[in-house]
Length: 89
Image 1: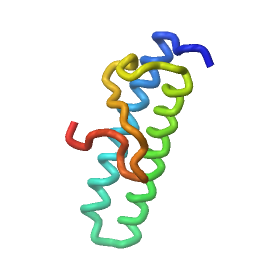
Image 2: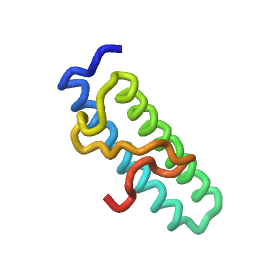
Image 3: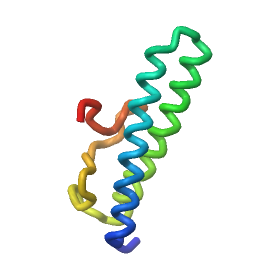
């Protein structure tokens, strides 16, 4: 696969930021849920958005874009369902 255009890289970067935010938010919402069904739903949504985040990272890797060439992306390997980004960042 050829490298990404600047526009494609920007769109993927935006998508990564959106998915990262959603993973964090649904994780926080799950911690606040007293109802087990609500908590499960929030955790399911968190997992869905984590998969989206991981999928976007794979697109960057498949395009042979080096680390740091998509600005603002912290390149880390998948971590078994946990966010693949630094939760404090």
